[in-house]
Length: 227
Image 1 (cartoon, rainbow, N blue to C red):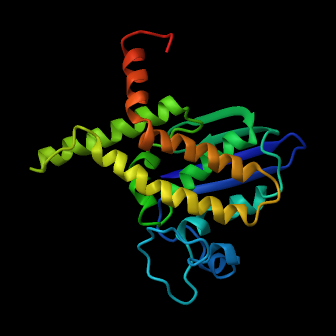
Image 2 (image 1 turned 45 degrees about the vertical axis):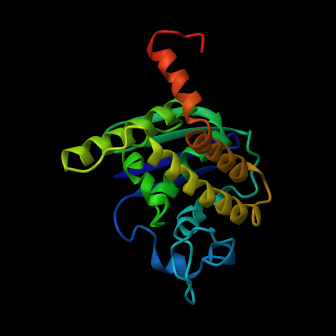
Image 3 (image 1 turned 120 degrees about the vertical axis):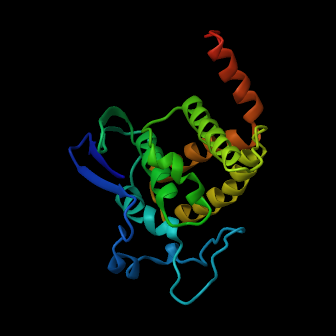
């Protein structure tokens, strides 16, 4: 997987960020110069399974670092033109910086080496830029049910009630909260913060409002466009 996000702001400043599933895509020398807020012990997730050690860094924070630094002083609602290219196709959208960052930061978090966020990697490999809440719910549930189908084929006990999906997203909520605290400590503008809050709101809909979200999807699949 190799995805390129290209940003062009209204004042013609441009930024590019590449997300890859290749090992070692984060340069070691870059990690060695990472700031204090990326240290593992800084606002560490309450459910983090990583063992503290001298010089240890939070994998998700290091992955997000270039984006956070580039936009830490920017206004969330300024206009931006974004192009996203992967090996198969490209997407282009004129939107707010907040929405574009929500899409990019969510992808970077999932593709980091964080052992908790890595549960989202199967979705990230089939990344859909600028996904709406409905699309996020549809993709989350679809990926999870496909995993259950493969488990059943392998002789396992499938979870058709989606209990594991809710539990997984409850675990991820703790990670989301800690990451927001990390970003909050360094951002002057609100672009990164609002992007993360928007992403976390979408993720929390799987944890706390899944049944109501499924009812909405069911109604739409039955052809009721009023929901």
